[in-house]
Length: 300
Image (tube, rainbow, N blue to C red; front, side, top):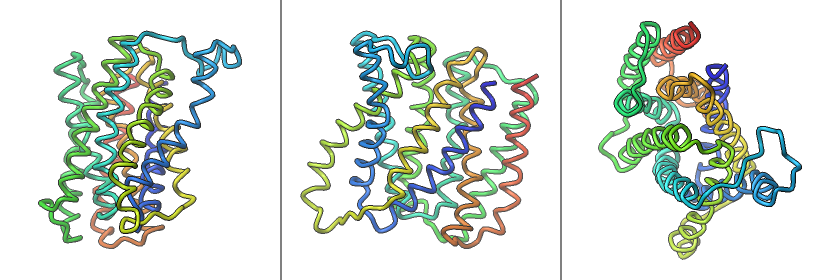
């Protein structure tokens, strides 16, 4: 069951990347991210109000949670800082680099998560899962070689931001497993208050970093901006509940979520007209095969 939920999260993540790329084209990164966090907070605000004030409207649903401790809020606030740092770096990279490059690099995140999950949580993979992981890693390496035709220098500041975003995203994934599994935090509590704390941090950054430079770093509204919040909220909802299901493995969930690179790859060709995609098609097929092996290994 958790495997299917993880794949649904991957689909939403792919559409999330597409919405980000569309919104960031010629637009102010900090302002776009602020609107993203604002809309996400508004989506989950009814959940917070109902749960914190025990209104009972959402009782006995997946959207309700029980009020918790100040320490739990501190853990979620730390998660917000880690994830938001990843997002800021990732948004800057997404604005300046081709989607067909950013997606594959983000897809290497499960390698870091896998090492952390094995070392920290004692997770073990079977033969099918290891086959899927190794094939996916190999295909991502080949994809990175194909991306050189786009003349992207990995020493540039935008490429560095892309790798920093990937590493921080992996740390965030491991931290999710820690706070949900080890501290038994309700996934809906984490997702709801995570959005609120992110909005508070982004409001401060908006006023300090972007507002004084608004005449230079211009912002224009795009209807793709609310789609960012909608898709990422749906992706995270599936993700947190997959983690919370019995028998779930963070290493496999994280790898499955990288299926989003296939969605963004297709949209890079159909929507953004990016070049040099033919040489990357075989690599994407190998990624798909790797995902199938992961799914088989997770259900036997």
